[in-house]
Length: 312
Image (cartoon, rainbow, N blue to C red):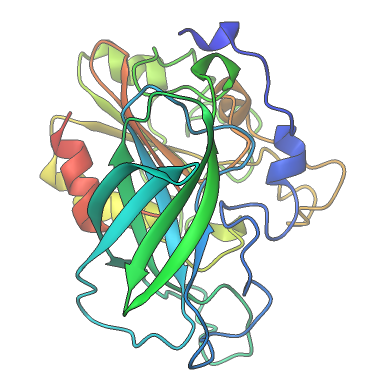
C-alpha cells in the first residue's frame, strides 16, 4: 500500500527522535541508566528493539527484533539457538527457535576506561514471522532454564506510516557530498565521513541495481548497540558489488545546536521525513524495481546482514 495513504503514527518523529534514550530503538530499556552487567540470580529480561509507535504489521512476512538484558547470564562466544514462542490469548501462533547474536560492545570514541552508563544488552534476536491478525501478542524466550517474556502489538498495515516490505520506496530527498541539502554534518561516522553519500537514491535506482539504504547517526546514537551498524554495512559492501549502498544521517542541523538533541531548534533530515521514520537506525533493502524487499530495524550483525543482502 502506498505510503501516502497511511495516516501518521500517534507519536511524532520529533517526539521519538529527540532526547537521549529515544534516539535508538531501546525504548523502555530497564537497565539503560545502569552500568554494564547485571546481578546474578535475576530473571532474564527482554526488550523490544522496535518502535512502539506502530511499525510491526499484521499479514506480512517481517523481522521482529528483540534483545536480552544481561542479568547474570554468562556471556558466551556462541550464544546458540533458543526456543521461542509467540502467543495470543494463551494460544501459540508461532513456535520456533531463534539464534542469539552477540552485540559488539564498541566504544569508538576511545572512552572504554571512563565511567559510562548504557544498556547492558547481552544478545539480540530477530524472528521472522507472518502473523495474520492485528492485536497484542506475547513473545516468550527460553534461556538457561528460564523464560523471559515481552508483549508487543501488531497493527493493520494501513495504520503504519513507515514503508513496509512490499511497498514501493517513496521519493527520498537524499543529501550528497555535492548537494548536502543543508544537512551538517552529512555523516557523523567516527573517523570521518563514509563514502556512501556520493549519489542520490534516484540516481542509484536509475542504474538498475538493488539498493541498501541505511538511515543512522553514529555520533548521536544513544545506546551502545546501534552505533556500529554503519561500520557493519561498510565491512560487507565489497562482497556485494551489484548492490548500491547509501547512508543518510538522521538530523539536519546537529552542528548548529552543538549536538544538543533536546534543543527545540534541532531538525530531522529530509530523508527521515520522506521515509516516515520516527526511530533510527533503519536499513531499507530495495530491489531494482524500487520495491522494498526488507526493512531491518536497529541492530544487525555481519551474518544477518549478509543473508539479507543475498536475498536481493
